[in-house]
Amino acid sequence: MIDGKQCYILEVIPTKSGAVNWLMAQHFGAGPSLTSLREMGNPSSAYTAAYKSSALKLWISRDDYNILRSEVDESYDMGWATRIFHSEIDFSRYGVPVTVTLPPAAQSL
Image (cartoon, rainbow, N blue to C red; front, side, top):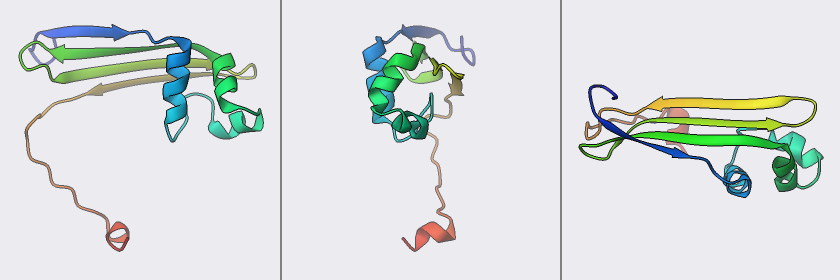
């Protein structure tokens, strides 16, 4: 239960290639830094060699199917360092209006 709501729990354990392909599609590295991987040659090969594990867990409301919580775990072993990434995000206030105000520097772009 999340905030008193019954949930389905979906656990996803990706394949090594699926996890590496997803990570390479990002503009930032959640595991070893892309800079250090580029120095090693092919970043995709380096991530594949360094990959240890990853998992995604989602709590989905049984009432309206909104995602209420997500949890992501990934780990990579580069030989000289092990990188572990853990993230937990709670989602709430679906349907509530939001106001986004750009900072002055972004308004002139």
